Image 1 (tube, rainbow, N blue to C red):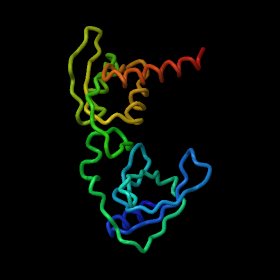
Image 2 (cartoon, rainbow, N blue to C red):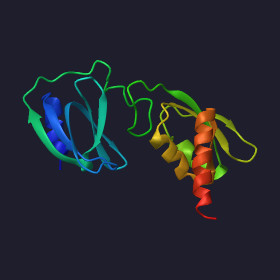
Image 3 (cartoon, rainbow, N blue to C red):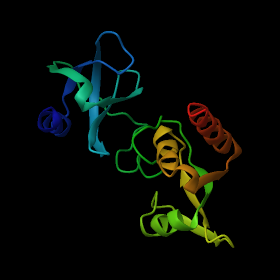
Image 4 (cartoon, rainbow, N blue to C red):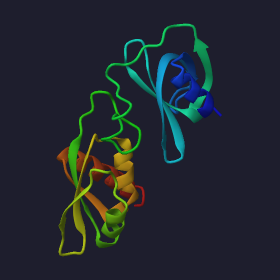
Length: 182
């Protein structure tokens, strides 16, 4: 319902007051933002915009309760490059200071056949084929929630090897999930 008007506000460089209720909030909050770009991920649309301090905000369109044009000058964010901001992520979550890391992962024989034909990210490279029929891949991404979510969707068919902080995060998540079935 907000997609078309937001697109027009972005192209016309309008400052907006967004009334937004996040998943965790008890009540809505108002944000004055300079909208930059719309992005779709998994059939859900998101608005990226900056506030007066150039802090980047991400709003799920289905959580926006109201949009008003504000009579205030529009400001570009010198730290936000819409043309390349999404180059090094899976999904939509990224802060302005995020840096990409090399993420190495093993995929089972069954999952690697799928992952080879439908890469998780454009940077994906095949590192080696394993004796067990699986493969080791690497991607270069800024680590975020959506990356972990994609890996977890493969269950035991994918295992993060490096970096160690991503490996341990995945291990804790999967151990926590396994404990629910005891």
